[in-house]
Length: 78
Image (cartoon, rainbow, N blue to C red; front, side):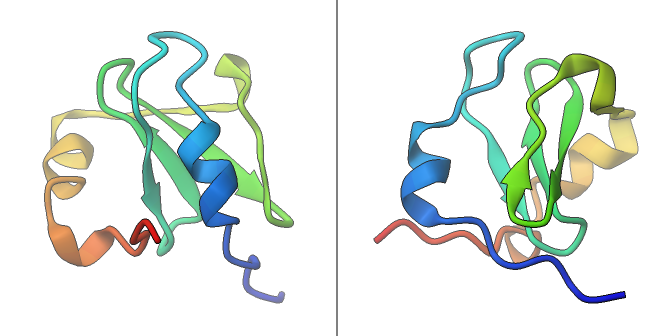
């Protein structure tokens, strides 16, 4: 299984959570876009974010706490 390619930084700047319209946090380790407001993690498959609520993983409090760890945020805006 090959690792997912990184998501394009320009695309990430444009994307918002379809539920809350809020900012997303890129978690490169899990290949997901995290919406803290909706408590959802949207998968990234083959470099393409799947922005469907039905496809998103529900986040619990431990998952949300982990998103505060700067080491998990691999996206740095240009």
